[in-house]
Image (cartoon, rainbow over all chains, first blue to last red; front, side, top):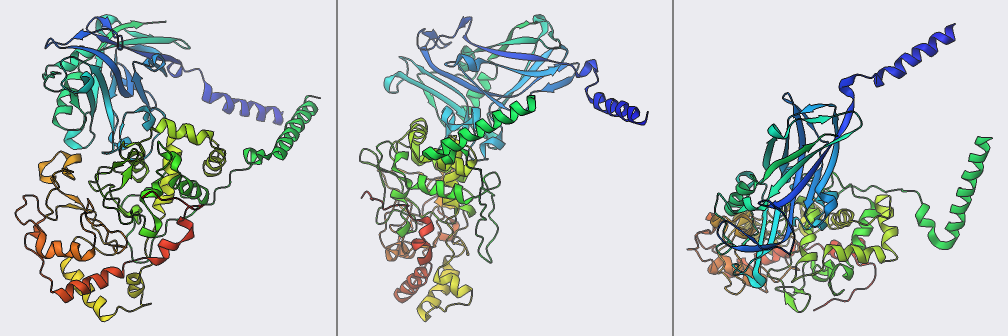
Length: 248
Length: 356
């Protein structure tokens, strides 16, 4: 009898932490970035696009850092465990990532485009922040938050080079952008236990050229933190929009 | 029964490891036993302002890996340029007798290679302070087209193929994986461990030696006229200042302004430590002065006092009599750390060929 009591007690304690509280059940959110120019899906090196200033360009590289991703239901934010995602158009596997959230109906997503100042002052990093990824300034320590490289006949640089490496983390030069996207007409994101619903986000390169005028002829390159980088970052902060929500 | 099978299987696996060991792969299964070391903080010195070793505790194994990397030409594109090529121990890890250093393809650097010591107390790196952490400093010379000129990818490729490095990385970090972070951390363990604190000056301060009258007079002059920027005991205050040098129109180096973009930082450079200054000639950010006499003469008669960003403490030339100029040099020579420059712990593991 005594032994049985102990076994029951043990079972009680052993079981209670995994009690099936419906709020604790989790599913996955998959985030997919689709890089575009206006309505066309981006094609590296192949298609010549035209910016609002009638300058043509083909894109060679398009990469940016995403971190602190969170989804929201009724004002309650569920944030991904802190990590960095380097979205790189040349690497299809980099365009999507998933993280677990409690089941429920979510109505918006937010994230930071850029790299927090802490990671800019903490020495050698690894993973998405590995300097191997070519998003790190070695002569003036800091990460490039977003990189757009292109070729354009309007560029006065050699080999028609267009190079926008946008970074800066100190004080007023900080280019990190908080992006909030509401699902609205795309509908709620419904996360069910054990399934993976998806948020598809468009990133439109056409937004890089304005409203702060960025003309290839006038400014074919930006490689340092400062005023120009800030003005380009202000432009590209508007490049994201919700394409659709896929509930599974 | 299942237990017996498990034990049998484990035994077979263990036995196979032992057999592998006999083929010279013992290191693969050797336990990870890091020997922890502490950064030497000489008596009376401040604690380093930034703790570069908080996430990178120095170990004997990490230090030795860093030492091998520091002297390894494989870190450069053509195999000729190791870190130690331009940072020579006998020159207090500066580039002996070179105003500017050489890079691959007969290129030249734009600045004089500084001595490497007491880096753990540095609050930034490079003459313009553009680098904010010891670990990421090495990325710059490794990848600069006019220095070692190599890509990080290729360096790691070469290290992974090398017969020794997987062993050394395992000993230092627990597994044989070779990545940029580990390489940079090991290099930082080596370079950060170079502490210069055993000069005659230090012995005098500790009551173990005495200055000659000339050195004593020079020390007094130093304290009056130089120590505001070259602050003891590190002989630098880590600040950026313009000392009124004429701009070299070929190099066209704007110094600190290159990294801050601020015109008020034009022509400012980091105040260099005067420790080992006897060995680190030529002087100034571009190595324009070959002797201490010339460098001191700049402060006596050469400062361009109309330069807009000139340091306020140098608005007037610093008067020195000729004998006092010599006395100052006598004192500066007491800052030479002969123990450091001969310390076998910091030497190449085998004889090096220096490129001149």
